[in-house]
Image (cartoon, rainbow, N blue to C red; front, side, top):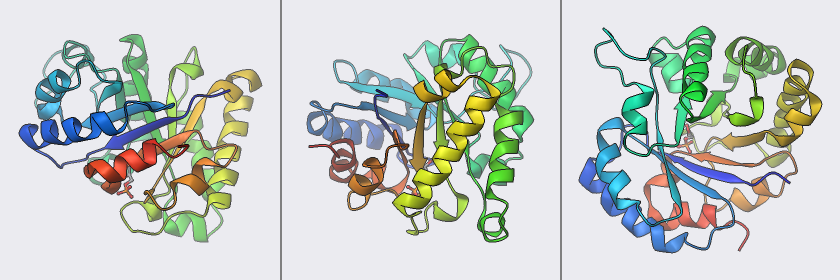
Amino acid sequence: MRKPIIAGNWKMNNTASEGVALVKAIAPLVKNASCDVVVCVPAIDIPAVSEALKGTNIGLGAENVHYAEKGAFTGEISAAMLKEYGVKYVIIGHSERRQYFGETDETVNKRTLTAIAAGLTPIVCIGESLEERETGKTEEVLAKQIHEGLKNIDDITKIVIAYEPVWAIGTGKTATAEQANETIGFIRKTIGEMFCPKCAEALRIQYGGSMNAGNCKELMAMPEIDGGLIGGASLKAPDFAAIVNFDK
Ligand code: 13P
């Protein structure tokens, strides 16, 4: 059985003090969660949020990591810098990074290998655009993102994949539970062929894209969906907690 994992992605929201207030509000609401609970926060919030999360069941995540160990990469953050503050997870290859910051499958792959080597759990994001879905290219696009973004990984079960159809992010337009389930099934099959079927069975694959308190139960009831990567709804404690407690 795969343990579900619900992660918030704050994106560029919450100053450090706002972030501390938010996790303090979330913590008591999710303390009996049966899934893994994670908040991925802006890098500058990490020290304060890390402190505020002590003694809670909420894991800390970052929103990116650089692939080099250290050096002349102005503005970037290394795995060692994250680890010093108890960061356990890191989002890699979010569609906003791919769209606005030139992230490619190649840089996704480099960042993912570095994160794994450092003992961080990467949450690797893949997903198709609206045009790609409407022109029947979803599987082709996902297969490329998987083959190029995840190559040379020794143990694929050390990562989490987030399937985030770009057209569902921040739009209020969620994939139907059936659509998400079917596409995640395809991702699992592709991983099974690339690595091994048993590893694919053990791998956790989240759905992301306008997941909220109202639709989480239906999505989480699907056999292929092992959790959620939550944007907007992770910014309000009761909404995020309702998703974490989808099984209560
Ligand atoms: P929304 O939940 O705001 O659609 O964002 C999803 C997302 O991009 C999570 O990484």
